[in-house]
Length: 553
Image (cartoon, rainbow, N blue to C red; front, top):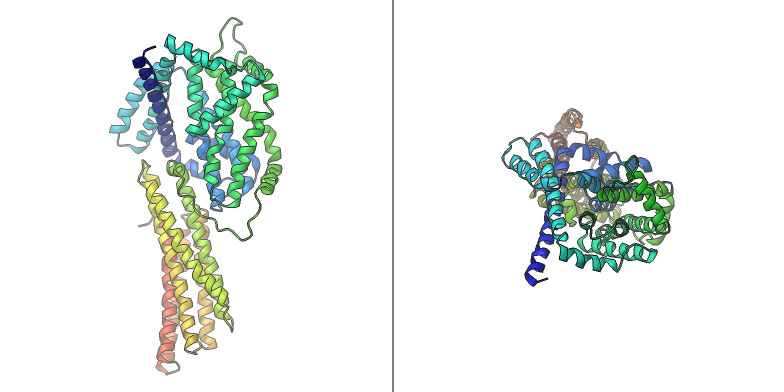
């Protein structure tokens, strides 16, 4: 074979694989945009019930077309405190079933029709003004690209010289024996680790099988390996993350490795069972569809593993807990915005950032609690004062993380709905950061008063504490609305916000009466009114959060 032919074949394989992967990406983005609200609802329904979590992992992976994305999502949510370890393990196990949908899509007999499907849907995407139609067209365009890419790869493998060369290479690891099965599994694992996409390995495997380069047994051996190789993505996402996030990644590795190894002794028996299922009802002389065999092998393997492991989720959680010890000090959950896969899945990323915004609300609640304890104690706790000021600094950092994360995500190809929600969250993050600033300022006013050896009267202390508790409850109510994604909280926010404003006006009027009676010094009066203004500003910012959640400008 001359050099020119080799280069041409390599270019076709690389080009076909690139089109295949790009098609998977477009299909995922289109499905996410069309099913965005349903996808976010699915993620929000994850509970400690292992069956529910597994079902969510399966459905989400079917929508985003990548088990790697779902497992990275689970690790990210555990890292930000949105999911527990048990929930994440359930989602990860379900993701292994969801990823098998790729094989079944390829079972469709589209082949060379991939190009016209790509063209028609591409034109619809470019020229349609209806957003839902555009993203539906994008999804179909992705399907067309997947089949066109597979068609190009398969065509290059069918060249007689290439076919013979590849056959001789794969003959060294034919899955005709258990040693051959292990060799195939290792090759599939390494290939998936390199490209970090089980879909890419699956696509190449199917193209090789359709071209007659490898037989069904070798294909099945490669499939076993890609299930192990795909765990590298979650492992990389867990580096530098919290302990629970690392535990979630390790549970994915253990699940896939153990699930592969226990099946190896029954490998040939399992394949005969798959052949019987796929060929059920077919004529004895009829050749079985190799793509359907591979898809069924992949699905059956993961379904069986899930059935085996679901009752053992609690044990798996204990094992990874022993493997990764608790840290000597309490960890602070944070947003893993550096993972590009979250940016490529805006429907999931927007939910993760919402969880982080809600966590900002939790930080402000702690600041309220610290502040009350400090101002009601005769001798303020210096450690608690430092904690409150530290929280304010933490919220500055978190706001920066959220802003960078959303900024990077919204700069991509995202739907109008995600853009609007991203803008709302940017506004909410800014408002929470402002609340923390005013709470820190209120503490500074109290510290200044003590330094001047001045004190509020019992009446003034009572008034300010009552106002503090009222505003605290108000912010807490709105934060609960953010956590549960309930925009209807706005009606309560307006009513209670107006009531708090009225109370603050009354307190100011009473205070001015005391000033006119010369019952207070100018500095004392100034600090009291500044504290009232700060609480009013806290109320205003909290109300702005409720308005942002409700989509009000």
